[in-house]
Image (tube, rainbow, N blue to C red; front, side, top):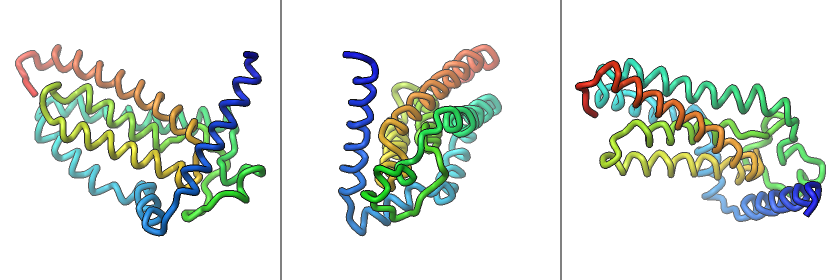
Length: 198
């Protein structure tokens, strides 16, 4: 199948998934998805998580926290400052062929949507914790952060701020950065604190 035909099919599927998710709405979900999509409401969660990481990793937190911050900062910068202006793909709520069909309980964001920074940041954090926390422990926390990343990402499509492919691309960027930072932590922590255990 020619590349233009494949891209057309992907775009069509992307639009259909967006409309299906956006139209599967209820007043209760409107409130939940709007809440989940707001960055500031998660600050208490971040504060508790950072405090717990400092308590759990002790001296290794001197390495872990900068790597975690770099993961999120890079995910945000790459998606917002590189891909959004480069791809210049209008958000669904700004698309002339879709805007009239969408329900927008939280208004409409900036002009461009590819890639989703929310999805990249959340997935970067989740994958980083997956790599850095002990393999056989804290499964509840690992499952929780991935569920949290999923809810945030779903909310962006539900609110018509992003297409599903915007979210998927954000996940890939965040996962790659989280895995890279997690690998660096495990390698450097073993070198600098060979006797430390987590």
